[in-house]
Length: 104
Image (cartoon, rainbow, N blue to C red; front, side, top):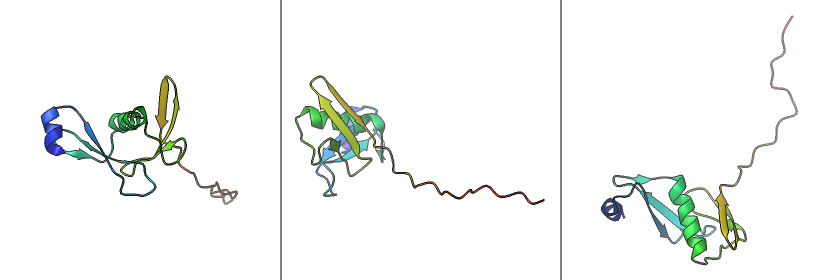
């Protein structure tokens, strides 16, 4: 894959592979001409778009998941595909104040 990325001489080259995680739809590996990247936004979105454009049906409705990087929520209409990283779950805020009390 690294040799192909070097040969294409593009800033980033993405390869779509079968997932290693059964919950994921695919696995993506991203290379520059010199190294493999753990994540890059444009190739990640491009990979999701390419799969959906090729009529791929995600395992879970409205969610296209990659096991290499962030899961993507995807939606599709006749003329538009959107994909974004889902918001992380945030822990519930404690009701107790964490501000130290002033001593007098």
